[in-house]
Image (cartoon, rainbow, N blue to C red; front, side, top):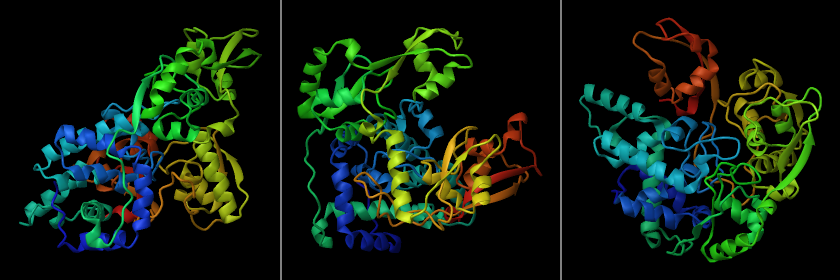
Length: 469
């Protein structure tokens, strides 16, 4: 159990906010009801502090589809680089950061590693989870040189991190004793919510929902990692469904012929078409077409017949797929701000910074309108919607799975032309500005041709100035 440090001003500030917004905590609790039992079970098995089960409230408000300006995704808000190091792969069909079981396991592994490396102190581990181990170590070195204590509340951490840990402590204190703060909380059943079903092969999610006798929304909320209209062609062939529906799904799948698990469409290759062009036309991947048609490479010929896996239902039926969520967000934005969007096709060399300056819109808003982060790479031919005339980002979507109400500041992105100093590496610069090395390399393509950076080199950074010390 963590000490809640109720005598600290930062904890008291967060306590006051949450105690005066019980409706927010109950909205989050309704989302958490699908996941909390299984997270608690994993923490109990590891004998870690139970307060860690509440960390997704701070990270994502228990929204499995949450995506932040820093490219973090899922309940536990993993960025791509960290996700890969904890066995969460991201591809066309599946985002492992939103896989609740895999991401929970990765988050607890990461927190335990940080705890072991940062003086066996859970508050420092939480700070490292938010801002990176390097930033915490940097603050610890500064305090050591100045003869100051090394506990969390004595460190000069990033602005967001200074609020992040007190926020978890405040939420933990309220949930431990809601009556003390005159808060009435939604009750969550102390029993498993889901069960895993081995489905054996790729399966259209509309067919899966029908076979399990649940809604598409419920299926996506339990399996938020799936980006598209079906499970991953390569597996693992698993679905989470409510406990009471698990045997129903198994029984119905047992009588479902393999050829009815997916819909197929025949395509005759025309002049000028490539495998990637055909894949884009049918909203699938070249790899999937190779697998479905037993192709060893990308070579196809005019007149060749290809079998294309397609969704059983219209796209509207898959509203919680990545494309469906993006469309809902863009439709809501258009209605909310009353601006008809312009369509922009990305050209080679374009960046969010350049496009935002050309259209005079905030870079963070431009990225968010298109379901991306400002640090995400843009691909030539990609289409963006731009709400010219919108002075600031629109309000969050009112849908049941949106993250709303978090008492946090808005990001302010600025372009920085940074001059490398003696002894600095990309990792040190990334830690200094709360960025990832991969993002810096993406913004500075010329670095790929250099083995090392040198003092005096100039690198372009896009920095959230609200998160610097």
